[in-house]
Length: 635
Ligand code: M6R
Image (cartoon, rainbow, N blue to C red; front, side, top):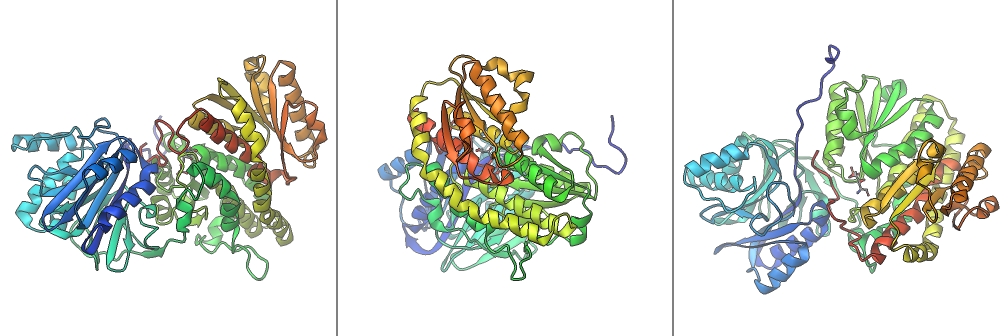
């Protein structure tokens, strides 16, 4: 069936790679370029961690080290083969797409004459024909990557044109697909040149030094001043200047922005893992997301929502697009926004939305939720929605990210950098931010009185302290994890907002502890899943507040009894004081009394702690689970 006239159909599938890149130039030869690159790669590991490499440039030319394996392998290699003092460096941490994770396929890739080095994030779709062309011209290849063609093309263009920025522009025009490329050349160790098409690249502005990074995490420890780059642009940095042009060499004025992340948020700060640290950061993440949203007149303020009020008032449907944990935050938000705004809210996985010809009109308000702002499925979904005339509001954590830039408005979550692959504090801050959006819309559309909005905001402001109380009780849930090292499968049940919390609990366990886990709507049990219950089957149940809608609470109590009667080990997350629940629970994890719609902010915390602790008990890599990257920049 064809698309109705006037509606745009899905474009061809696009594939992008995911990796982290850093570029740096300082004034004089020193160890600084190497230090900056190592530090940045440590912060960027979440983008990929199967190999890494660094090349430095000084007046003697280029020197590099690259290794397959985690960053620690590269760090050890750098101890054994120290790189010289230099003025510039580029570095890369990889998530393999073309060519397996080997030393040869690790970046940087050097041109045949060793004069040019490049690192690359993305996928060059025409690499095969370019490789063939270069082979015909006598170029020998050392790796299986698509990237290596860029190194050779760039070196040849440089030999012909004599200027690295010019050569980069000429080379970029020959490349198809998505790319961020950074390059250094032996003949000028005082500059690094970058090019971007679709894959992310931001500039960090320093004093007597400048930076390029795949995102601000690369340089936020050194500077909080940054420049956004647009599509098809080439940037040249020296120690004292930044120059941006389009691929034709026309000057471009890049927008400057300030990164308000606290650097200490991107270090483990005494915790064994980033995930533990980020779980403990959650009260602050929610507090910071709520900060400054109340105007002196008591009305809600979302200054960054520059979308015309008429658009927000007249929207006849809200569609939330997101992936993974961010999508579960969207599921939670649906319950609240529909209740407060009386407008239909659909939540859809971005990749499903993108390719199913959804009904989207000028009156559809799309809310894209993303921690990284670089999730390719979500980027493609918002592009598709905007092509249909919809307005897009991004709820996003990373400033200057692609999703923030490509949306009509960005409502930032202020969770700070999230490094662990498993999302925790981003989830809570996404719920807080989407709730702010819901309350703002409700006030604007007249479905809530200002004093009603104020009452919810007052409750929201109590949440950081309540989340802290749950964290303070973490020992009990850690003990449980210690007993469950050999468990094969765990089920999670919830109703209403407890349902997405159950799904999030299951996702955490799958990705961290590699255990089969499923989250179900408790009402669905008797429609099939109850057949899974056997003697000793662990089942987490998220119980709604007994002070909320009676029927919800009663129904979940019945569900607990149903699984318990069939031998389940019932692990219950319930509100302190809910004595009725204790009778049917093998173990209860108490959370502070909280209104029903806000309860996910506390109920999910024991589930996060459990997954994190179980992965640790099993000796698994909590921050970098197998096969995953933090930011999924491939479709
Ligand atoms: O950066 P995003 O929020 O767009 O990422 C979306 C998902 O990839 C992410 O939430 C993923 O599911 C996490 N690993 C879950 O812990």
